[in-house]
Image 1 (cartoon, rainbow, N blue to C red):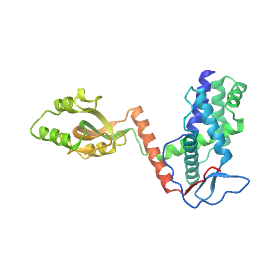
Image 2 (image 1 turned 45 degrees about the vertical axis):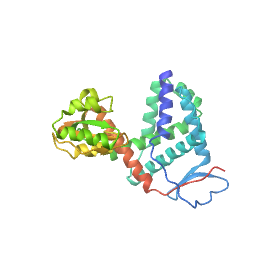
Image 3 (image 1 turned 45 degrees about the horizontal axis):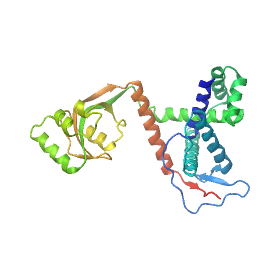
Image 4 (image 1 turned 90 degrees about the vertical axis):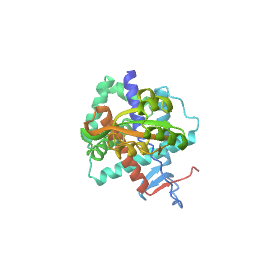
Length: 293
């Protein structure tokens, strides 16, 4: 039963917190109707009401309590992050409609039956749903949205196969340009990359391994400038100093080529690809966020 409770809480959290793409507000917002105040208006037609937002915020807080997470100190910022997630979900569903993606009642029912199996009975599942302050209809609507999102994710990431171009690279991270230039000059004089990494690199996770970053495809590294530099190199080539949020890197490619994607790496690529697509449609959307009255 505890396992099912965690699954329910995680499902609620996933539904309303799909990504962290920032939403831009548009000035000169139209006035909401008095009897149905709006929290946001998306592309001039998708309405997110204050009531819907309040429900989502409360559910998120309940989900955090269910898994033992702390309640956010800044509830206003938390409320805005939930609104952002609702806007993102609305845009996903709008894109799904354009693509002709359909989730039927039968699809939802099949998924609902899987949760019943996990809970042990429908009565037990409904009790858990009620404990999260949701009705069965609301829960089914949540499953509908989640299934639409999964189908849209499959379309967006369908180009990711089982193989990808990868590089095997290593790097030396230093704090500033002067240090990077000094290490670069030592490399140009024939210095050993691995020894210089052990001596100078600030990356504690790789320095003792000669700065080895292992094999990686595009979209894997957190520092895009480092990734771009690595993919611009051929084996045994070393980059000029490359700036990132962490400092300055000297990057050397050891080998490169097509390689099989392991399941974890493939899943990460699918997620990063979907998040990049989501950020793009958010930037292209007309989004009005109304101030709290």
